Amino acid sequence: MKHVLSAALVLGLFSAGAAFAQTAASNQSPTPSAVATGNADSKTAAAPIAGANSFTESEARSRLEAHGYTDVTELMKDDQSIWRGKAMKDGKPVTIALDFQGNIVAR
View 1 (cartoon, rainbow, N blue to C red):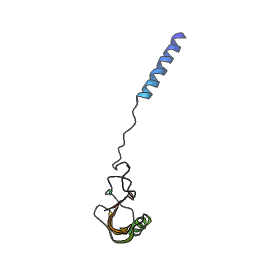
View 2: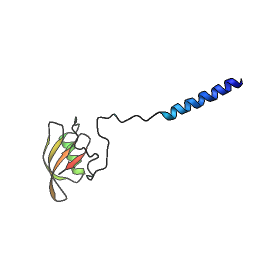
View 3: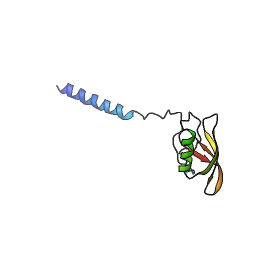
View 4: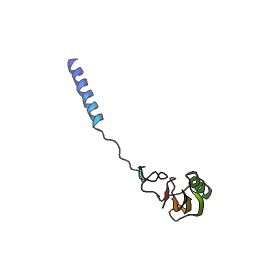
C-alpha cells in the first residue's frame, strides 16, 4: 500500500509539471493583430488591409461619415477590395481608404 501511494504521488507531480511546461499557442491569423496607432480611425498600423470587403458603397459612406468625414466623393472599391475616395475632415481635404475590417486611413 505504501508503494502504491508513493507511485501515485510521483505520477501526480509528474503530470502537474507537464501541464506547467506547456506553452501558449502562437497567433496563426493571416491578419495583423490590432495595435495602437496615431490614427484613431484605424485599428492596425498595417491598414488598409486588402481582403474581401463586405461593405456596400452606402455602408462604407455611412462608416466614414460616422467618423467625422464629410463631403465624401469619388468613393470606389479598388482591385484589393479597399474603398477609396476623397473627403473633408476638420475642414481639410483628405484622401481616404476603408478596408474590410472597417479601418479608415486618411492622408
